[in-house]
Length: 375
Ligand code: SF4
Ligand code: SF4
Image 1 (tube, rainbow, N blue to C red):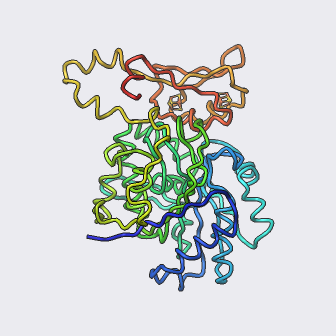
Image 2 (cartoon, protein in one colour):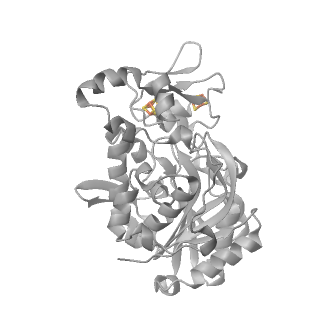
Image 3 (cartoon, protein in one colour):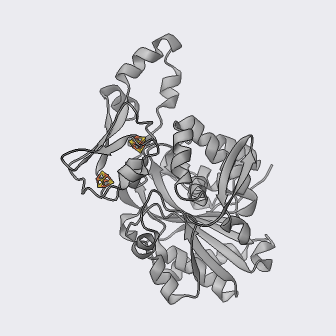
């Protein structure tokens, strides 16, 4: 069994010098020969959409800048990119998320994984399309954002790999894997395919998100930057600090098994051994599956009549059309009044619309029982 190490630094603000010091220290300790030998590095942030850094939806550009500087100093060719969600303009993502500014100031290449070629690979009988960029770079640094997630409860290092899947293929996968359980299997297949290629993982938790993440929650000052060469170890410690148990994150136990990691053997700095963010609001995303397991099968149908949740378009809608274009099952259509409407009967509850709406205009309506279960 492995004994992976998870690095955690208390960092109060996005001050470049402090972040650069932490990142340099962690990278310089890595024994993976790719850190020395590889000429090209892919830095893979979370770029869910065209959000400004202060919204805390996407990886902060100063964290990316610190990583860029480390590798440019070592004469590496740096690629920086992701496959943003939905149909949003990639140029707008580069600009709003601060990547265009980085590309203007440093000799790096911005790569749009939505339009790059991909390979279709298989893991455990599940075929997954993965961006060619993963295979064209000897060194890959996965740089996630620390957030809650309405469908998967928590998003960190492993979930961030989903951006390695090109563009609208992601929407198609949401249609094919509509519920939490099947989507977790897809994520694990992606993890199985990619994990040997990822050399290091960083989670930007200086300002993360709690509440209705990954985009409509509340920016939350956690004040931590975390790193590890083990994705499952990093997500285990990070999600625990937010208040989740391993079973709350649907893919985590299997991911630990795949990496041969025992949670009790993960090495963590002494001051964070049993640390919890006691005031993190994770109630609204806590998975209800455990509760549903205890409902006897004959009562299941009746229970679902009273236990339900679905997305609804609110008055905050600015009619941009992102949700209409992004829904994997085309269950959102324009109405005569110029507003989009969700067809509840066709909706598979992937919550992509909730995730991608740039105005946080899609609420999740919950029945009374769902509110109690998800409390
Ligand atoms: S609900 Fe959101 S994504 Fe959909 S049209 Fe309105 S503002 Fe755009
Ligand atoms: S309406 Fe929203 S939650 Fe429902 S299937 Fe479409 S994108 Fe997913």
